Length: 176
View 1: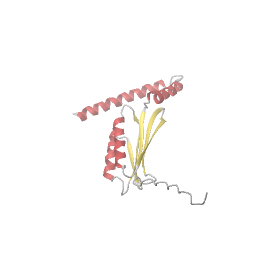
View 2: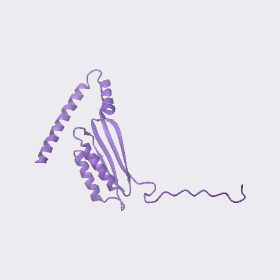
View 3: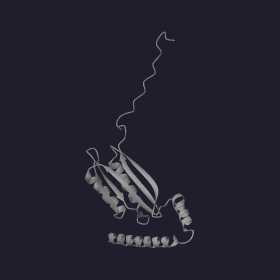
View 4: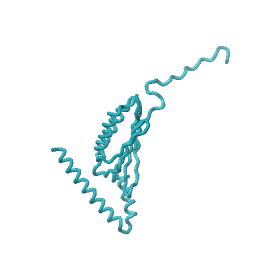
């Protein structure tokens, strides 16, 4: 029963997003709409902090000391749910890449996405640090919040203690 309610809520969100898009396109044809659009983008970005759409690009390194393909597949399925199925998966040498299409803010679940990012960080916690860049982009007149997530192997292993500095030596006798 809960799945049926979720589907109807998603359908309602889609129809509201489509009506909003038609209204924005109609208003964009009015004189002075370009200036109003710029002010609207500035308002959404700096005052509200709320974009029109969300997008993500995530790389999953593969290998013997990294999470297995089954765990990565679970993260991809969760991302597919968060982005309403609008994603592409690419198999590359030594990694799997996921890129999503822009999804409207009404359909995007921010809390679910942050939970997925935490799961990815935990999965790579022993061998990699998670670099998470957040960018603002324009796409077809809309403001998009893009997330770029890449697990990065640290330059120095975490297990090693930092080298201690050598103790200062006392001056030799008679070298005053």
